[in-house]
Image (cartoon, rainbow, N blue to C red):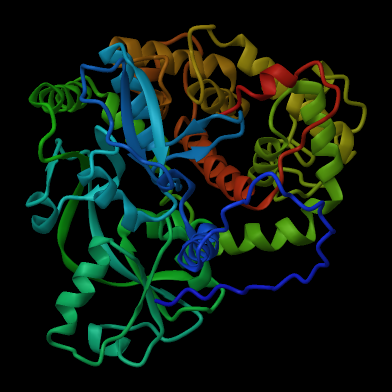
Length: 495
């Protein structure tokens, strides 16, 4: 890989200076000038975090936990509330809280920099979606696995699907530099010497998958869960075939890490695996990503450009009135009616947000087919459902439960929470509630609760679909930041 710097020489006329006679100023040598020029040319290509680095103090000597990370949808990302969240971020915050230490994050903009920096003891831990490989095991200590993945060759479905490594010969492919996918391709090249690809210095493979969708690459090799995330954003990305065996992701520590910290990492993962916290996190970030098919994503993206602009300002107004992110409201509106203001169901619900006559009367709507009235009322109703839930329920579970209530009714969601409690599940977690909502369609369950029968599977599907549509809008639509809003604080608490 070659990095070429474009330089521009500036010509100027120096100002005349007064002659200095009391002393002579020592001029820098030609060698000094050359070194300075090289450093200035290198500066734009340096990772700011690497300019001045010193090994971190040993764990236990300092009151902080220093962790190497990379940003991406599979690790950590900036959320709607302006704070970082994500699988790795959430686990790190839990771990630091357990230890009673301050968490300090050291970001790397290139995946390939993570392992070398950890080996130089720049941090105590690397939490960067690292695959556990034999080669890495020889240089690092790994904690317990938290996710199993498979290396996948992704392709653009507008072209012919490759069936084997030989089909990749002559194609323009890419992998993230320093990744296990790059290692796997080198193994494959032993039997297919003509195989070529680019190893790109980026933080995560989502950048490469975007370029694959745009036609800049013919194939990209990366982990299966990242491809699944990308398929919900770019419907022309497909899985061609897998390579290598299953791999696991885990936190990494330097070979000379403090044994106490190694044991604490092991104990932490054993604990969150045993108490279900790990399953809840996996569901939060990956549990919904396979819900939509290619046709669903295509239809959504098409209407996002052709229909949504007509109602964007109204959704902005609804956010100002309720504090709920307008993109979540738009995702709900699409799930309900595909943003059709004249939509009417056989049961009599009508309008863009599909309001019942009772809800419309309650919200003061005079015409359910009026898009503005319908959107504002739907947003106010969703906020009312969120506010009705017990205060101890946090985000994002609170929002997912409110969306389920929007579909099936608040009372039925309360019945499902009661069933969750009876079955030893947590009634305050969406992860558990989506197991008990479908039970409301079974007579051996709905006869034991107050509101009786409900098609409880429908709100689960609706909510999971909205989560996917919301993810897409978060990627493609800008947040709305009103200058003045009484709900500004609450808006920052959205999932």
